[in-house]
Length: 112
Length: 113
Image (cartoon, rainbow over all chains, first blue to last red; front, side, top):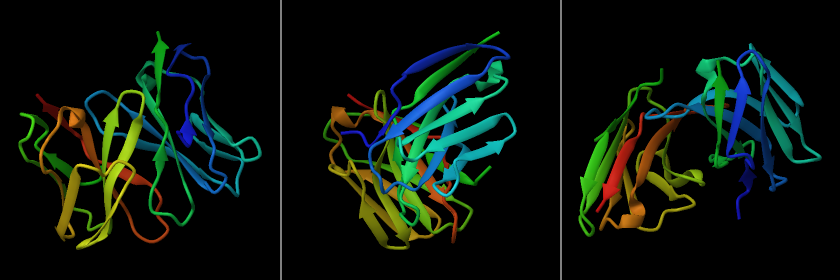
C-alpha cells in the first residue's frame, strides 16, 4: 500500500497559468517533504522542501503548501512555463530518518 | 551539480547473468542510495549506505546486494538477473548533518532479456 500518493498521473496547463500538483500521504509520522522534478533520461533534481513546522514554503515561482491535518501537500507553479514540463515526484520522510518514500509522480505538460 | 556518476548508463543482459552497477561520488557524502524507477511506482529504495561497509535494505531489496568499500563508490549487484529487474536505476547521495535533500545521478537503464 502506497504511503505517498499522487493521484493525478498527468496534468496539462496553459503557459502563464498556475499549475497545482497534489500529494497525499498516509503515515502520520512523516515530518519532512520534498518535491523533485525529472526530465526524460535524467536523474530527478531537488526542487523545494517543507518541514511540518511550516505550512508554506516559497522559492521563486514555486510554492509548497502543507496541510498536516489532511495529510496533504501541494506544489504551485506560477506562472507555468514550457520548461516546467516534466514529471514531478513528491517524497516524505520522518525528520530524523534516513530514507524517503516517493510518490508515483505526476507528468506536467505546459502548453505554449 | 552534485558530482555523481553512474556506470554503465545503459546495459542489456540475459536472464541469469550477474550484473554490477556502479555509483561514484566526488562529494565525500556519507549517505548513498540505490533506487529503481518503474511506471506507476515512482522511485523505490533498494538499498542504502550510511558509511563505508555500513549498508541496509530498502523497500525492494530482494535479488539485490550492495557493497561500499570506499566513501566514493557504492556498487549494486544483481546476482542472477531476472526480467522483473528491467528498470531504470538511480543512485543518490545525501549530505551531512541536517541535510535532507538527496541528489541523484543520471541513471542506468537496465534491460534483462
